[in-house]
Length: 172
Image 1: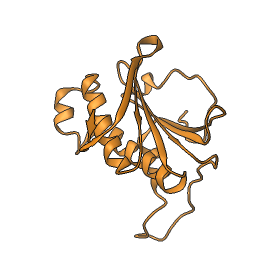
Image 2: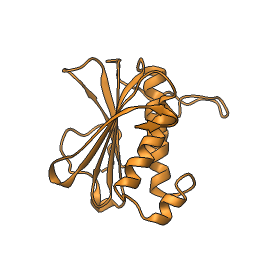
Image 3: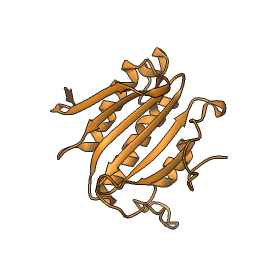
Image 4: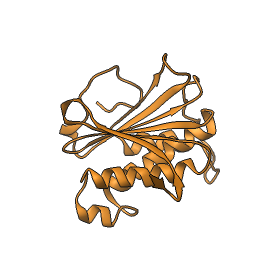
C-alpha cells in the first residue's frame, strides 16, 4: 500500500466487540504525514464520520481533531521517544476512536511547564488534553518502549469502554 507517496505495511482486522483495528508500521521518512494519510484512509474506509465531514477533513470537526491528534502523538514520539515505529487505530462504532503510537523510549511523557507566548514547542500534550476525551501511557513489557494513546468520542455518553487504569489525561 502507498501512503503519502511511499510504500507502507499496514495490517487490519476486526477486533472484539465490533471494533475495527488498523496498524501502520512506520519506518524512516515522513512519519507524521504518512500517519495522517493512513488515518484519513482508515476512517474513510470505516465510514467513521459523515461524508460532509470527510469533505472538510482538514478544517473542522471530529475528523480534523483526529488528524491533529495523530500528528501530535507521532511528532512527540519522533522528538522525544526515539522515533515512532507503530501507529494503531481502533474504531468502536458508532463514534469512538483510539489512537495509539508506539515509540522506543521507556521514559514517560511529561507536559512542559508554561512557556512565554510565541515560543515554539511544548504544546503537544496540552493539545491532546484539549481535543481528546482520554489519553494515557502504557509501558510495554513485550517490546521496548511505550505507547501513548488518546481517545476521541463523538459524545460524552460514548467514551470508551472504561477498561484499564485512569491516567492524568482522563476526563471524568
